[in-house]
Image 1 (cartoon, rainbow, N blue to C red):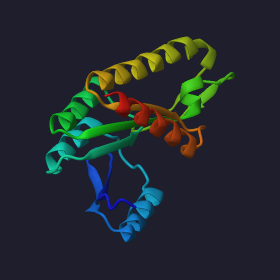
Image 2 (cartoon, one colour):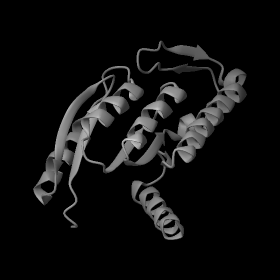
Image 3 (cartoon, rainbow, N blue to C red):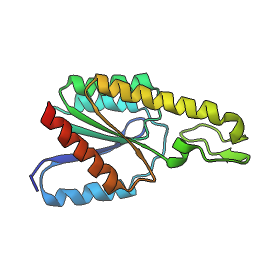
Length: 180
């Protein structure tokens, strides 16, 4: 309703679909349609896409990233740094499946490999502690890197209703903006 221009980039190892920015209310339909129909196909290279996006965007603006961020954390943070260097306000919504966060598996499980990784059959009890520690370290490294670069970071579990997660983020953002 404020006539802000908005666009969309969908990517894997490169930008697959780009809907240029526009400010009309009719522009929302192709964005929503693309979000609903977009299906990941290839392994992602988030860092390369962030660098390409930073070069592509000529005017400073707000860049909202919605991703699971499964890539090398240092490369992700370097890509985000490029966006910040170009004076963009960056908001990162780190989306993870609740099962990735809680690792509730009890019996022998076949884990599906994503992004070209193979399937793995294992006893979850034998890897639970190491897995959860790696996830904690991964999230902490991304969160710390975002804090250092003044990037808003919000971890969102897939079991959270989206409206609740966004409302929580917006309330936090409004509170921090007043103090700055």
